[in-house]
Image 1 (tube, rainbow, N blue to C red):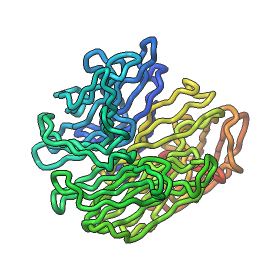
Image 2: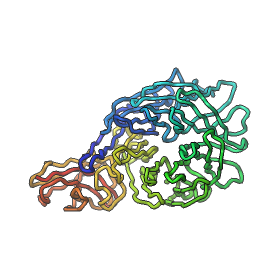
Image 3: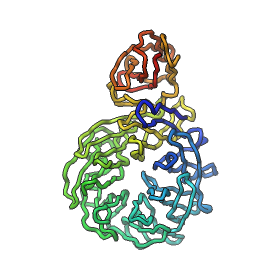
Image 4: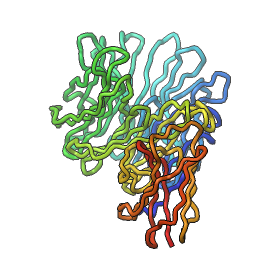
Length: 504
């Protein structure tokens, strides 16, 4: 499903919402990473295969700047039983020449610990340009290892991976850092201990001010009250300093450098032990020596309904963050000082029985907007009930899929209904009508209102809409002067749908 929204209403910022139900063919999966390409976007994730064991395989799909699917590729790499591009967000690293470096973790046989991790280079269509083995284990060895993220290091295509490693003689998992050159050859490896602690590294970013890196992960050991681990290293992976922070973590932490030689972390944590505890999101700023500068907290909410995912830092120091929030995909925009600028919630599927919408990766785009991907569980009235479905949402600079959504008094956005909105005639000369078909049992909150904004964001008309037989109707001759406008439908809680209206 694809809904294309008018770019002209937001300058050059094209917006769209789309999911991959028709491409997945009933096979569930998750979109973990999205990168802008010269021709659109490259989306990376995993999905069940059609084989008898329903094992997972890596998929890469390219879409154009309007959200149309261009390529759909399943990657096997020999004959593995299953493989993953990692389990978390932002695994691909774009290089200056227009290629993308990632990794593949592969199990080679059913019921064994045989495992291979690969360095991989892709083009903008998701084709494999080169692949090289980084580490392999076969029985009776019992090594466990894998990469979670990588960052470019230097101008020759070198990258540094972070992940986890437990070799046969290791008592517990250790943090793992591996530097590969532009051909995939391993330059060095590092373990991050101590060996009697459970350590996993999840996130890495260049520290361009001295050629080093900043790394974030988790560390578990009795007596350590703070699970999250923040490390700054030199260019060879040697630790300059490390610290623990953040209490009892819920999801893997993310770290990014900032233009002023600092760094920010984005995490979620429990306020107390136990399965039903309240959870908060925390955005923290640190200076170059690891001293805390400020901390912005969101929440609390109960029962793990706050889950931090990826974030990115803009050139001006502002920050865009993704998180699962109360069943919605949430985007937060913060200033460089940690002040909340706006928050948007999105639902991809909303018919009864839906699970939740989980964003994984968010990226700024060249037109000044944002694009994010993830997965959403379809509801009972959706095309493939209960299917975990890839999605991509492209917004403008204010997080809107229809320009002006931030001006109608709500911050939850129902993006699954956009394809059901019909406005006619359009252009309109004297009598405007619209119809929005709702899924059976759709939970409206209060009355539905249609608001018409001019291109400067000023409300010029609003009308109460009627609900008749599961459809929202509007019929009016009360039109403004000739020109272009944006119509928004909202209930008391959320934005439902919208589109361009031209009055002649």
